[in-house]
Length: 172
Image (cartoon, helix red, strand yellow):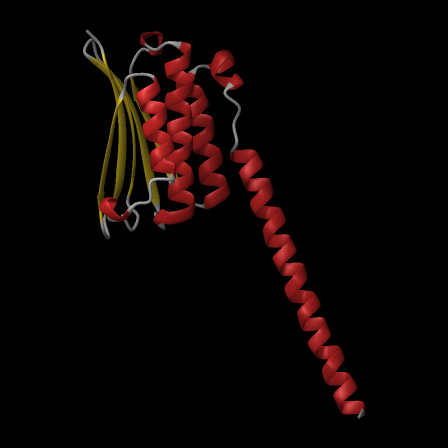
């Protein structure tokens, strides 16, 4: 009987330890998500490029995934609404990388010319079959945002090679 009691206590400790680990894991994830939820108010204060650089740095620190930002555009080419939607689409793309891609590197490119302004987010993750993607996913949200600013959204993904999401606003 004494052995059963000790075994029961040992099992209880294991369960308590498992609960503590699960709670700790949930708390860490919550903190990560809150930290990663950069406010669009930063856009007004620092601009799109600096806000995305900040978000990319936070993303790298929180997830251990390299995130590189390259910018070749004049952000005065974008309206405030376009900046917010570019930012939100980039944020959603990074969330998809964080939860689904198993990537080691992410590249964000902001590029502009007289004809178009684009942002692309590409990763070297597992990729996915675009045709099997549910309509309620983050991609649907990105599509809605792109449509709201008359932008084109392109999603290219190759299994085992990664994904590239590009949003472009054409200028006349």
